[in-house]
Length: 266
Image (cartoon, rainbow, N blue to C red):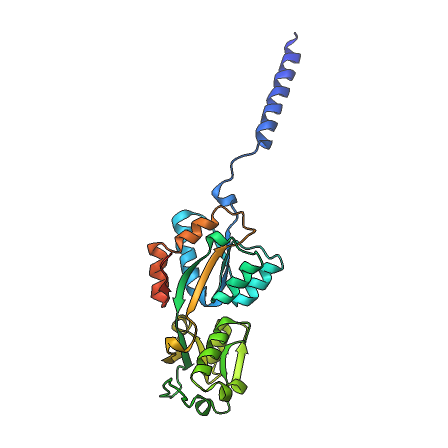
C-alpha cells in the first residue's frame, strides 16, 4: 500500500477517535449539578443564607433560596414552580401542600420553633406590657400595627389569635397594616411607617432599627412551628443532603444564634 494512502487512513482513524472522545458523555461534575432550590418562609432569610453559605463551603455544592410568605410559596408550587424543599412558617400551609400532593410525605418533619413579639421603632418611647385587655389601640393612636396579611400570611394569623385571646382584637383590627410577608411588616416598623408591629422574635433580632416591646404569652396563640419537606417533583439528589445538614451542629449553631428553637426529630 502506498505510504501516502496509509497516512491518509491513519489520519482518518485518528480524527474519528478524537471525535468519539469529544462526544462521549462524561460523568456530571459537581459544578454541573443544579443547585438545591429551597422555598422558605421569609422569616428564615438571615439564618438560611448563613447556613447555605456554610454548606457550600463545606461541600462544594450549591443551594439557592426563594423567600416569601408560606402561602405564596405553596401557591407557586401548585402552579408548577420548581423547588426541591419547602419550609413553611406554620403547619397550615404544609398541610395544604400535603393535601395537594406537593411534598414527599415521608420526608416531612418539624424543624424549628419561634416566638411572637410586639415591636416598635428603635427610638419609640413606650412601656407597654402585653396582658389581657392591654391598651394597645390607645398606644397605636392614629398610626398602624404592621403584621402579615390575614389570613394568607402565617404571622398575621398568629397575631390575630394572640390579640383575640387577649381581648383586644376588635379594637386593633381597623388599625392592621397587612403586609405580604413578615419581613415586609418588619420593614414598615423599621421605616417608622407603623407605630407597632407583630413579628417573630428572630425577625426583630435581625433589624437594628426596631426594638422588642414585649413577647406574647406562648398560650395566647398556636405554637410557631416550621415544618419542612422535600417536594414531590424534586429529582435533585442533594436535596436530602441539605435537609439533613439543617440538623448539623453548624446549622443548629446558626439557627439558635438567630433565636430559633430546634424541634427534636421524631
